[in-house]
View (cartoon, rainbow, N blue to C red):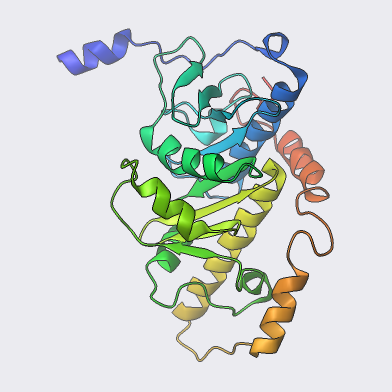
Length: 272
């Protein structure tokens, strides 16, 4: 056994985390439940990338305290009690008794948005196959379906600068996102955010679906049709969260029922 294997064998990488429900406020616990469920749903809908990427959530009533995943867990392993509490600069305020840590890129991207956009409670970032494909397309996201038209005039683009470890990139990420709740990170992946975890998930689900349908349609090698500008603007307006109803309010209970009905596949349930 080499030294690396020996060191790994002595690390505490157990995932049977004890519940901390009685150690946090009811508001923090509810946020932990929803965030853990969001991780499981991202995995359920095939938007996970091994142990990589992050979903962060602001703890209600706190001074810029966030929850983030331990770096090394699958999304389907994450529970309410395994989430790490950090500040917007990435300083760990609390984490479970484990040798797993957090990933620096998580708070570089997420912390920047939480810090600049106090109305944002959740930031979600993915590296999906379709999302990466569209992020590399010069045309960007095309308004070729009702789902993708939702983002016309309501999405930003951020040019690739290498792995997100440079704190200076924070300013440019925030500028490129602007007031929007969706961002295509060129040659990288997708990002969504929102005033609730539920809405951020819904936005990412719709953005991912838009990317998948675009990749499929372009692969068919046929001429595509696009609605006129007047239809695009009108439709995009109607599909904004504040126009008719917030996204996630009606959908979220159904998503939680799906998680409960499908079971945890041998992993601890997200509500642990």
